Image (cartoon, rainbow over all chains, first blue to last red; front, top):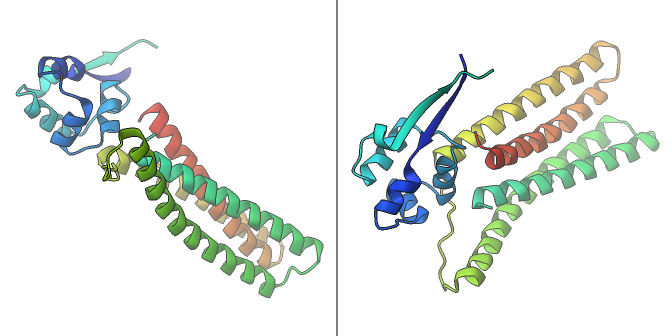
Length: 74
Length: 151
């Protein structure tokens, strides 16, 4: 099995939501701004609960915000 | 650098200083030929008290310095300090603690091994504290790396 990666569209979705700042999103979902930064840079895969909370803020489904890529390169 | 990272950096500095004090004092005891339970256990007490005091002072200092930096940056009279611990902080903390426990266990095993090969018990007790401090430092280092590189 290859390396798993969770990518996301948070940066784009923030832009389309009145250019919401990372701080505003962090406050709405109850985490620190650093966690939002780490998620956007794909340095941290959020828990299912946090993923749902982020999706709810953007009024989207989890699949619209996050995508799962399976990297099979060895 | 987030508040949690600053906290870890300060803890790392404090425990490195405590480790230095411990190693220097232990070497002095060795050189003076005073390797007796009384002097070693007194050093144990000193290190434990120092660890508690340094941890409390470091926590207070991190809060004060973070507030000062925030006031200078934003100009707000009552700035918001992001000192909440979210799921990422908890996960990094757990991973760091796991590594610290691993090092501590290996150290404990090595310390007991010295007793098995016929060294005096005081060597074993000295190594317990030494590996405890090293475990704390490596735990903090791994937390810093996880914050920087990502989980």
